[in-house]
Length: 474
Image 1: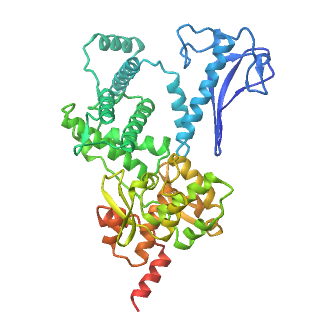
Image 2: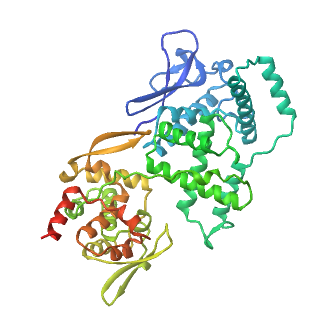
Image 3: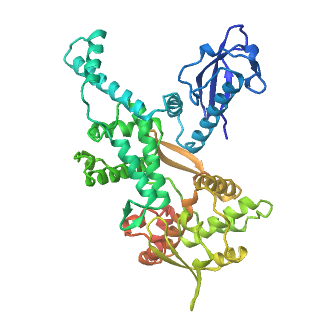
């Protein structure tokens, strides 16, 4: 995994040089000026940090450095603290957004670290900037020139006038807190942890978008132009795939609907926002491939061994990652026909009952019905790819049409590269369907509410579909 680093533009000067924070990802690299300048003699090129000297060139530092304290002094300890914190912040951000990281999104994030931490002040600056920008656009449309003094006069009048307060982010923050403390419910029950995390991610993305778009978000500003710019931001800056963009728009519409019901606004333009989807580039594993994974000898690596077992359990149970990693001994029961897993799904709160087959029974017995402690979904996906790469059948190349950054291109990838925790559930549904099991019976296990949502999971290859047709058409 890449890590942020620090560097000077040149090592051959007696004059103070800017310290740059760098980050390399894929074929892209960003070098961002930290606002700190020191002479090359004060720079430890081995440690890539300033040397422990009594004084650094503080007078050249930006006044609004991030992590700045009230008693800030330009000494070694404070400078190295700032630089170290910058590296940590960038590494955390890049790791959390590694699949969608772009040079522009990373720059926007770094810019945000240098903004004053006063949220009210940030909103005020955005508000004033948006107003002046609108005036300039209006005058340009009428072919009217405007001088600097005119603009200053307009700004003063605007500042002296009574302006309506914008409570969009204030409402969003209150909405999220309500879902966390249980004062805001859905269908009479508390929101799930992962749903709350999605609300928080939505808030974070909207704040990034506001910074990028240079226009304050208000309830009144959410219209068709807002939607167009937001989609452009997600496609070109965040590098999101269409399905991710669609999910985000869906969550945003849900929040705006709640705000409408709470009488925080009367703008209904958001109702026309399109929640689009695209055929997923996920794959389903065949029963042969799943068996090969299960038989793989991983005793030498407990970390990979546990992830493999949990993934295979998902392939045989049809449960989501959030459910098969949450199976407790109390969920494992015995009836007349044999063992079952009786569990309430985290996402839908629906009860599902899954028959325990031989493979699931073997996994449960291995851990004495107490499965390994869950890890993050991000780590799980990273480890399962590492495991899948060891299987020869999963090193076969596949060419897919993939949309990223608003552009659809053909990409040739190995099957192991396309595997994630969700592949387990897709594999279960696909393999059961190919066996000819009735869809309503499969849905009873997976918990899909409709045939439409179920069929979106089926990843039967064209070749396999032809074989199935031939078999039924004999």
